[in-house]
Image 1 (cartoon, rainbow over the protein chains, first blue to last red):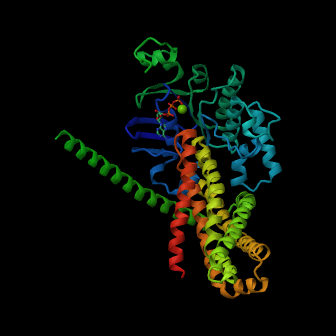
Image 2: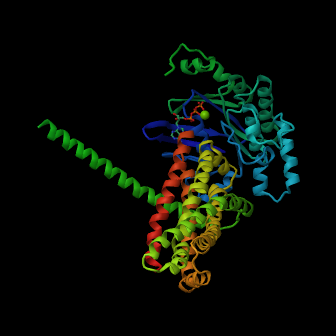
Image 3: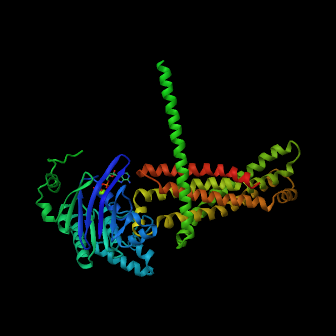
Length: 248
Length: 266
Ligand SMILES: Nc1ncnc2c1ncn2[C@@H]1O[C@H](COP(=O)(O)OP(=O)(O)OP(=O)(O)O)[C@@H](O)[C@H]1O
Ligand SMILES: [Mg+2]
């Protein structure tokens, strides 16, 4: 479904991705872990064509993103939902207008119908009575969940989650984990999730990949990752300050 | 000896900096022209976001009325006062009306309105889009399969062009009225001659020149405001830079283009 092939990306002097290879099967839940600043968000943006590789390719559903024109890219993006790390809510629109944005743009549904669907999606992420608020009136964790509701609003086939549980209390976080698992089981959603939360990673993933120094260092099922022989991965998942990775 | 080497190093540095700046100016001009091309292309391809355009017209147009009124009124009045002082020296006071209406229609109406709207609406466009850029709202639009050029830039570009036209009409009328008030009521020149001289020496052509300028300036303000906002980087500081940049560049462009349009449309 998604294939990332030898992707290189630099910003000026800074080499962020140095040959990332990753393939995600249809219906699979892939989680990417890695240190802060290791390029996880950058990788996610390559998958939906917000950034393009300096070298290498990204193929989604058999289509190479490099070869698509604006129209083709736009059509392809209709298959996606994306949750941004900082939620990226439209601050001139109310919560329900944010959640129902794609419905408004791409369907002929009336405002009442859109509002109804938005309310349902908000309930799924554990929010109620926020429809008419503006994003500026929400807490960080609430914004995150509104962003999540927006990402799942169109019943997309592929959902990209950039740190879905960061900033949430443990109970709300676990409800989100359940939601992600549910979406995959019931709707067969393919997903790529970025997280620092290992509890969540073990719970939602079919496979976990660790990004380190611009490459995928190790990839495997949650059990394989838990029992890793690689000292770097081991240090990372156990969250130890002592080991081969040193804080820079 | 040492100082000669030093000064050569200094000159090289200066030349290098000037060279780099100049080439980056050309790169930027190219980027703006590409942005203009894309904006025009998206303007003519459906769908058109009417609601959004109307909202922008309200924000750019209606909200700019007070500042345009004040500027135009003051300019018209001062113009009458100053030209009276000059013209009286050779007994041509009756020509104040001509001076005021020619300057307001051909020149000051569009230019002053342009500068005012650049400072108000251009700045707010750059700040709003810049904030949307640095908080990834523009990226979010793309991921929701909505073209940000079309959704954000086109309505602002169209609204700014259209509203500049109407604001300029308003500016012209207000300036001329202000001139009349000072010329006739304050300085006591003959109202009939004042009006005759205003009308006889102002041609429809003069008004059109002014309005063509207004359309161009409106497009400039919308284009530069959106361009600067769209290309913002670097958080809150970047938004500040984009905002200032938008005002400075659009004001400069208005003044430069004003000369060329005046020279062309003689
Ligand atoms: N648009 C950009 N321009 C310049 N540099 C960028 C840009 N986007 C990301 N970077 C740089 O790329 C590197 C990786 O950023 P990225 O956001 O992918 O990190 P991350 O792995 O998601 O980290 P975190 O876990 O903290 O979110 C960082 O050093 C960042 O400064
Ligand atoms: Mg990130």
